[in-house]
Image 1 (cartoon, one colour):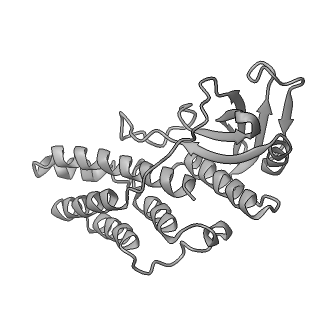
Image 2 (tube, rainbow, N blue to C red; image 1 turned 90 degrees about the vertical axis):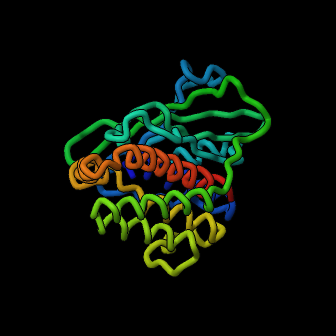
Length: 254
């Protein structure tokens, strides 16, 4: 899972936990997250009297809370035209959607910039012009996800990549209710339904896309050699879609 998606999921979960418990937000950045800022610009949000920049997640949350923040959701693309680069940053397709009182909706788009020893990230606020009263809704894709994981695990076995078979099987087992370590440690998981936690964990386990050594690397060639190239492409695309749908439901719907 790429850095952009990991961060936006963690921010969304931390905000939802703080709103539900009426406590201060607790966000713990990864070491590579050197700076996270949030810009409210008069040029982007026309009703603002002055532009404002929050210097971190905590300041941003406090500013939003004082402005009437009621709920938050994330938006992700559910497919990628090029599975070789699903980890690209700054696609402008990943958004934080913030719901405020009086039917105001703002969305924030991140911009990642490489710096010494890590990354600086700035989220820019935009007014959601087509605002409607109904919030985005996402569905539980557990059964579809399990079906995809089962079929792609079989494919991995056919092309002799047992390590990926094991990964897909582990992700399936998590959805199937089996005990999986290391995925129930975060504070906000205590409020999330178990189904959501399992979907979130399975999405993280099965996201095998990337560069050298990933599912995009040698397995594609071995699938071609065995006449399974079409199965590889179709199931890989389906897996990415199910991962994204799992994140949309697990992070947003609780």
